[in-house]
Image (cartoon, rainbow over all chains, first blue to last red; front, side, top):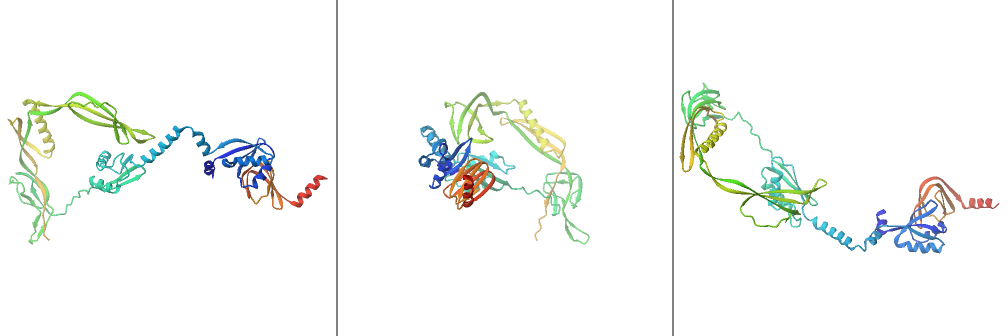
Length: 390
Length: 69
């Protein structure tokens, strides 16, 4: 009711002279409406519709009552007040049009539910398929985009695109990786994963097929999972054990004596863009740059009340570099190779005991080469499932 | 308070409101009495209502005679 009255406009009046009751009784005989009638500090007040105030004033005069306007209220007066301020009206109209147009674009993309996949990774993939800040909603098929995005992102169990106004939420659930369940039940043999001489054996299950000091080749059965009992009944077992053998390993490490190296010259350039609804407006005079530059883009969106706005500043950091040829001396190359060898021993041979190590150095085809021969003691047993045809 | 089918307002003040209804008059005493809304049929009274009195036409005439004497 109040909204309707505000929309229609109302006039608050007071009685200057005459008998108020006469006016009320005169009003009763017409279809005029008055409300909020009260007496305050000895003065009678009332309110009526703005369009019918003149009619009411005429009626009041006819019964000898004089009315005076106290206050005008409502939308018609507001319009009247700003009627002459065309700029304000045009501005309001533009703002309305702006809102109407802008609501047809996506201005915020939120990602939720990701655990191993990063938000950036998801947003980059979404951008590749055309879902980014500033994407128009007309002609955008979110269902198809949803399917494409789900297909493109690895390890996603389900994904959905929920749109609320200009905001799209990419909600996803990553698929759970099946854990490796150690099945100690299946029948298997222990085979050699490397050539070597058996030095020590500890068999937990299965039948030994080799003896200490036997020479075995890669793939030879060390412990069999197929056994026969005294009644010549065949039993299949899950062979298990540790077979330590002396193995021989030869590795070659090489380091080119001449390499191309990226060296930063120290010349840096920063270019700023105004990011306006996905459009990047350069804030610089674009002189062409000579040389090679490494580019880094930094986005600084405008944040208002904790919400990221589709307006912001983009900074493109350019770092000049040169690709120069670098020559290593033999000593430098050897130091680098020794580092590589140490890493190899730490990673690949971490479960092996190195008995002896022989190195052979040479320079060939512009590279420094170190050949390392290792004699190690290590567990060469590897489980191999016995395939049974049922 | 809503009064339907009133005939006219006899007296209006912020502590007394006299309304003519069919065959009688209605007096409402109170404070800050307001006519919230009125049209040709109904009237809505708001405020702090203290007392309501109904006076038939005959009792009114009697009252006025006594007043004349």
